[in-house]
Image (cartoon, rainbow, N blue to C red; front, top):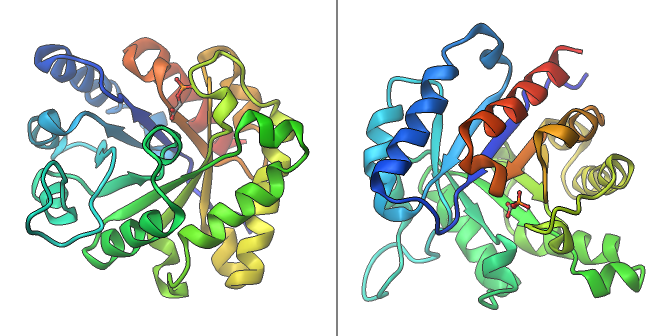
Length: 260
Ligand code: PGA
């Protein structure tokens, strides 16, 4: 019943210079010309200034390009913000919303993130909504309710017919950039819970179509085990996505998980 194609995102964050970015993108684009790559969707999330270059570079390839963030506003006097239509015009088809470095690092609220999700899908982008508990919440045994609340708040008002535009990234905050990943079993349990909540909020067929990827210290050495979990549909990769060889090995792990 599950026909979810795995999805692997490369979140470059505030890294790379112009040439390095292009080189990295080219290495991924060239390698994904292979047959195995058709079993996995790949989206690069470069810094905003490189988007149109990389968007152009990727335009005839299966590699998708996305924004690391998007404004909740259509246009206007919002200094420093980037709108959904600007992303679309730069060759993006997707955007991250609610990455922990914005949610927790910059204090973006659930209601702001929900407004971003709604604006992005209204303008035709796909959204990868990031959720995840902090260490103290985990230690207090509250991980599931924290994540359930973030998902419900982030998707408030999102209609069932728009759910196909959404993917979720479960990224425990304590695992991001720390080298310490959630165990495959813990990731599976959280993903299963998220899917069960989506089933209640929408319905089973819609919930079973939503890709829920895991993020937080995914590397070639742990990717197979994490992606083998039935409700883990790929990954959102930070550090390892800056190294073409490591990122490609992770994509290959996701592609093989869909073949099994
Ligand atoms: P990491 O980052 O792979 O470096 O842990 C993941 C993310 O921030 O999306």
